[in-house]
Image (cartoon, rainbow, N blue to C red; front, top):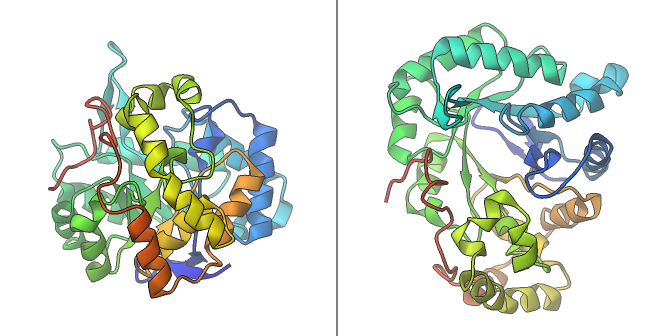
Length: 334
């Protein structure tokens, strides 16, 4: 597995990581044994970066990683570079999603994550969503303090705007920014790809295979209807879903002609968008994980990249990437 660095001074990690939201039932039912099988496959493939969050489950994803590590004996601290997140909360009265970036909340949630993971520190700690009422400079000072305490190696922000990144980075170098980025979601190219490259910040790309649209077997309308997130997502509602599946046919044929899977080609394309771009695909299947890892071994020349752009030109997708409710939290910047 090729390697890339997290930020300018972070650890060298595998060129692709693993997004552990799939250790919950977000994309279909799973259990601890299935999660452990995926982690074992990740090790076999040379994946050394695991991305999780206290919100996944909640707590389920971190607990599955922690129980896997607990079985590894003295090797447990050397297997993975771990990233986790905090900042998403729920109103105790209404159950509505809220955000809390206070110093007390972030450190308390980090301590809970460390306990579930069974580690003393994580290499990367994200603010999962910004609390607009708290200046990002203040939040960055809090995160820098967690570095000084030895609880984290570095920090990042998820789904922030380039302007917010610049404000935070002026206080302390930001190791990573996480954003949805793929052939289906090219919004980061309107400033975030460029700003992260300029500042030496890793751009960690989640949902790199378009929540299945960039694979050989996109989710059907029946499958999407079973998943709470997708059944209300504009791209997986009709008539958008049928249009998106039809639009992806040329890309699936191109991948087959190149002797690879659509998922692998999607990952390979992302890796060619900059040395600082790190995809973190998630899956409940060791077989699918191996397909994703094949993408890290593909070298695409200019002709191949041009063919991909011809098959899936910018703006090809039908429907917004989020519903109105799902847009609550991410920062829009264009």
